[in-house]
Length: 113
Length: 114
Image (tube, rainbow over all chains, first blue to last red; front, side, top):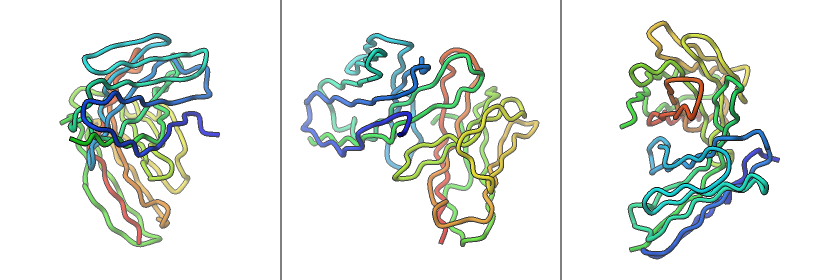
């Protein structure tokens, strides 16, 4: 079993829809939870991060972490064609000295105008 | 633009060959990470260097090796290449080891092994 599981999609939604992206994980030591966005032929870029449990909002994006269920979500409101990309969840432990990230396989999102 | 540069952009080679991928981190970043991205496995951590020293190892094959030079640029060496090594190879850099320690990714090197 992989440490981080993510539905690869693809996901296709009409412009203006609410998008929900999710990941589950097995390592209870993960403390940093991130969402990266990767456009075609580009490297991933950090979209949002959350430390430990809770919610975080940034404009149209909301990240949620439920550590009791080992489940994280990213919600995109009023989705735009420019949101079309692959979204990767990523996680890491704290305090191990190594900062490598554990990624989900990514969900490809297409927002149709 | 993340500030991380990788060369070459594309590499096509044959099985059994050896290649070297190069990464220059963002100015001031001491940590360099290498990741492999394939369609079925997603992004997999290979190895991390911090200020010239190996810091962490992930699922890196023995045929692969890396180093970080005094000017902080890093090279990933892949030898005895197999078809399954075809993938995107990303380098990322970060400034510190503690806290969020955001990793900035380069544009990647696409390796095709024929």
